[in-house]
Image 1 (tube, rainbow, N blue to C red):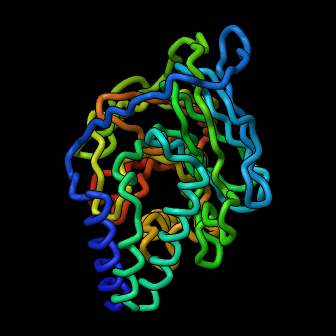
Image 2: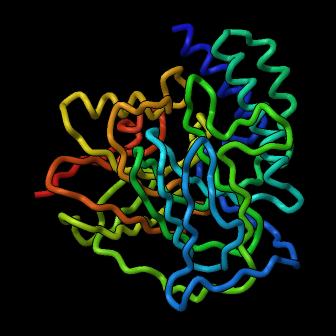
Amino acid sequence: MKIIKKTLLFVCILASVVACDRSTEQTQEISIAEKQPKAEPVNESVNLLEINASGMRFESNNTILSGWTTIRLNNKDNMLHFAMVVRLPDGVTATMYSDDLGSVFQKGYDLMLEGKSEEVAAVFDAIPDWVPRLTYQGGPGFVSGNSSAQSTQYLEPGNYIIECYIKTNGIFHSYSPVPGQLAMLLPLTVAGTPGGMAEPSANATLTINESGIQLTGGELKAGKNSIRVNFDTQIRFPSFVGQDVHVIRIDSVADIQAALDWMDWQTPNGLLVPSPVTFLGGINDVMPSGSSAFFSVDLSPGRYAFIGEAPEADKKGLLLEFEIR
């Protein structure tokens, strides 16, 4: 009960600052800087950004062409990672994101778990006013250690960061204790030059709306799958997370509940490594509503589930079990 009260307090404070009362869909229009760094085409058909996750750092190029963009996350750690793409408002840098938001978020979270409500309120007064103008643009979902995952999303020119906020010993991976230094935050510039990549094809389609996740087209198969995700809505829950989809392998009857409990970052064990189940990738939340993105996943015969990163995901319709024969 104490944890619940602490969590509710933290969520209310966060909601008041970043306008998380947006429980319905929203569209953000972000202006684009006129001058963009030049990027070289990857090849004629694929606009690819390859990221290695190792040693609590992302290693990758910092510039990619615009348009349809494939991001491949190679998880070279033993722990789980993901690569969420966030577009920054004009004038906001990756260092500002880390120093002015990441540090405040970690400190407030620590105080929340300690039950220091008055201090939590004081800390979150310092959250910058540009936070509600952040927009989320997909990226490879949760993938277990020594594996790879990839997603394809349409990226407009602008400045972005790629973030992983999984926790180790209660510390978010994107948090840096040293101002001016970045942990699992990768600055990314999407250049004005189009990459020329065509929209991918898919053998199955998921639709996410106010009812949750639904398989609305095609079929899943053994082997490699390209899955289109249509975000009919993009709901921001009071916990600040949005609608997304990740794939878990179900090895035992206990895996579903273990995954549901683990997907709530507000709890001490939420998003804490090691994860209780095997994750195979997916797509992080995409803004605005009405957009689509793609992810790839290799499925061998067995039981699986699509699951969203949200408290009580099953009650929000963000849990869909399936079997591959």
